Image (cartoon, rainbow, N blue to C red; front, side, top):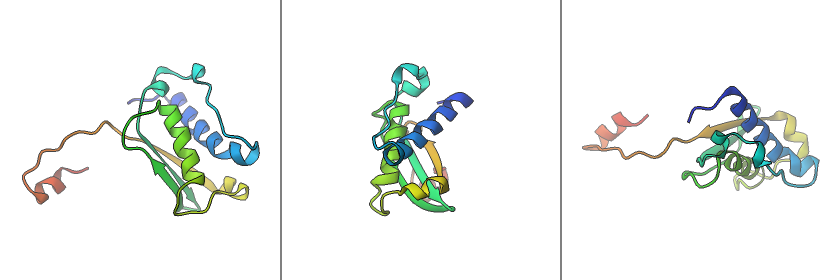
Length: 124
């Protein structure tokens, strides 16, 4: 999936709002899907990773494209901030220290291989 710079910026804003709204406004962020481009409405699997001072602070994602891209990013950003069992829920005083990374997964493809070594050589 090729995204424009504006679409990438929109996803960053969506992820940030999905994380900030529960702490700052007291309710979850809701996306106005009428303002989204076709790419952002296309079903996609994503991971959202949070880092605090270059240390992992949360990471949640999906392996299968079930939700529209923008919605998947919002859901996974929220989950990474508040529902990753490896960490306590994000606090308001951490918001300025969080770096958000969004990964969009490609569609799964079968890999044919002869043995373990052949498989390892084909993985990227």
